[in-house]
Image (tube, helix red, strand yellow):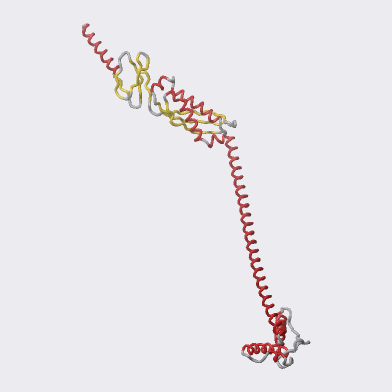
Length: 331
C-alpha cells in the first residue's frame, strides 16, 4: 500500500468522524446543552441539529418529561411528640434545561433531600390528629414550599402526595379507644338532647292544654253569667208585672205567682233522687184552684184586649170561689 493510499483513507476517516461529530439527532422529550470550549452557548431541541466539530460539544442530555420521585420512608415526630412513619411521592418536570444542568449538581438527589426535609418540617408543626385528618392541606403546603425552592433549578413540581402515615401500634390502639369513647359520648349527648326536647314538647303541650282549658272555663263562666243575668232580668220583669197587676187591684196576679212557685216546689220535691214516698199535707183542690186562677188570668187578659169587663170589678169577686185558692193557705 502506497503512502498516497494511506493518506486518502485517513482523510476519509476524518471526514466521516467530522460529519458524525457535526450532526446531532436529539430524541423527543430531551434537550441537549451545547458547550463551546467548555462554556454553555445554546440548547438543542428534538430533531437534527448541527454543531461546530472539535469546538462545540454536547454538555448534558436533559430529560424534559414529567418524572416520578419516590420519597423513602422516614420517621417524623409530630407537635404532640408522637412518632409516625411517613412516605410520599413527588412529581416534577424540567422546564429549563440549562438551569437544571448547571444550577444544581445532582437534580434527583437535591429534589429528594429537599422534599424529605420539608415533610419533617410540615408534619412536625402539626398534632397527630391534624396530620391524620388534614392530608390534603399537608400536600398543598409541601407542594408550595418545594416548588418555590426548586424554581431556580428550572424545575416545576406538579404534585407531592403523602402515601401513608403509620403511627405505632400502641398509639393506634389508644386512638381506637378514644374513638369509641367519643362515639359513646356523642350517643349520650344525643339521647339527653332527645329527652330534653321531648320534655320541652310535653310541657308545651300541657301548657297549651291548660291555656285552652282556662279559655274554655272563662267562656263558660261568661255564658253562665250572661244566662243568670238574663234570668234575673226576666224574673225582675215578671215581678214588676205582678206588682203592677197587684197595684192595679188584680188579685188573680198574686194567685198566679203563688201557684207558680207552689207547683215548682212540688216538681223539685218529686225530682229528688232520695225521695221514695212523698207526703203532701196540702189540699189537691187548692192546686186545682190555682190552675183555675191561672186560666182566669188568661181569660181576663184576652177580655181586656177585647174591651171586656173592668179589672176592678173582677178584683172584687170572692176570693174563695170555685177554681181559686186563698192568697195564704195553711197546711
